Amino acid sequence: MTDLFSPMTTALLLALAAAIAMARLLYRHLRAEPAQRSRAWRIAALLLAQPVCATLLYFAIWPPTVPGRAGTLVIATAGAQRAQAGAGEALVALPEAPAWSDVERTPDLATAIRRHPGTQRVRVIGDGLESRDRDAARGLSIEFVAPPLPRGLVEVDAPQRIATGDEFRISGRAAQLAGGQAELLDPARRSVDRVAIGVDGRFALSGAARGPGGATFAIGLRDAQQRVVEQADVPLQIEAPAPARVLVLAGAPGPEVKYLRRWLDDAGLPSHAQIAVGGGVQLGDAPIALNAGSLSRFDVAIVDERAWSSLGEAQRSALEAAVRDGMGLLLRVTGPLSAVERGRLRSLGFALDGGRDSTPVTLSTGVRDDAAERARIGPGTQDAPRAHDEAPAEVVKLTRRDARLFAADAVALSRDTEGAALGMWRAHGRGRVGVWLLGDSFRLVLGGRSDVHAALWSEVVSTLARAQTRTGFGIEGDARQGRRVALCGIRDGAVAIAPDGSSHALLRDPATGTRACAAFWPIASGWHLLRSGGRSQPFFVRANDAAPGLHAHALREATLQLTATSTSTAVGAASAQASRHPSARWPWWLAWLFASAALWWLERSRAGRRLSAA
Image (cartoon, rainbow, N blue to C red; front, top):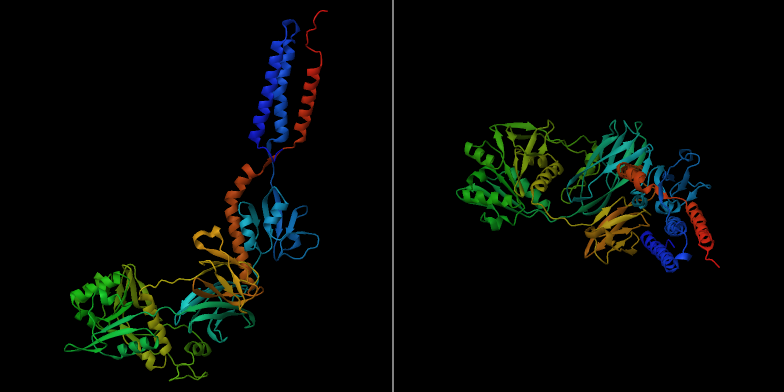
């Protein structure tokens, strides 16, 4: 009956039945002759018994709820110890838990909760809950004591996508390896950087991206005795973005402009140079008018102080308007500035003090051994190849203006070994404007360190250039063999291609809304390819047993987050609402049975009836 009627429907039907029975009794009583009517107490007892029986029947069908104590369910996950479960507690093991013969096993947490109704508290033992179980755990009161992390790599923070030629930074943390070393290995497994692991286990490594595509770098960890502890893959997606279009304006020819233009050509950046030589004569490319139409075709403009002084007010206004519209502007200060030029610089947000002389500087390139330096420099070019065992040249000293730059919201473009800024930039509208004090970076090329020269100017141009819109798919979660990963930003008909060439169709989940995500369970490790809507993007899948510390840390942090959110919400709800449950039905059925039997006896007995005379 509880499946057919709701409590309200049952109450209305029982009330109607009691009202009809009471109306029938009164109708029969009033129709009888006065001498044959029952006594008043009998009529009152019969009338009162009708709602009493109906009420008892209602509570027998829908017993009232009473507060109860919510049950606690112990969930065993990977790495759980049997001693962590108390005696007499309900224990359930998930698929990744140890193989215990006398413990109930379930495929997921949702199944375990369905098999144990009334569960409002969950105590997790082991490494933590997998991603498939976290949705089912929401709304419950979760207790979890995080176990110690295994020895090795437990955290890594690497950029998902980088541009070709850019330098990148990878930071991480290693557990139980204080005093050891961490090194970054390129796809050829050559060391490109090596640092000491801090007392807190943290480290930071840097490298350079070369060709586009998916590249698998690696982090190698060594203990204090230089023994290899772990080597974990770090996948990087290297893209070839649209090259920045550069406008070079110089007030005079010189080696700095010459080697800057050579680097732009080697880097594949389309450039347009106008170099004044005096008397209205210019070298380089054909002159163009500096107006809104021509400047919209460039992403960054590099102008020295002499070219900036020779521009007219309309040309300078056009440059500033282009910067506000998104273009980048770099002012190279290679000599002393006049008071007028300092005032124009203040209009861009910079205050400059000094700058009449030069001071020597040494670039900060990091401390690396020869092997790491050779790996970063690379094999050279076809015209100037480098031997694999050739010792890298020392980084020569350079000079910069001894000026001091001031700006409230400026950021350093680069710094020397003393921490002094070689240049600064700040936002100006939708674009960026910077001031550059280094004047002879060409000496790096002459000294055999063209790689440092390229890295220096690559950082400057990429920082100031007009922002480009990057479209790509989102990979949510740790893509690991045999485990679910969310692929977002896809369209209908998207497929994931495994390393062996097999394709797997993806079905979008409507519940993800505008994120447009689909679940994917990779069965193989290595580089996969995601294709959707004419676009493609590679993504890396780790082997199931690779980098166990990373997976253990991810489980730990996700479960602790569930614990923190459940403490403030689930506990109060469990004690106020979810912990109430229906009381026992049998007392109400027994009371209804006695009341109905008494009513049946009273209706058929002669008690309270008037007997007519013969």
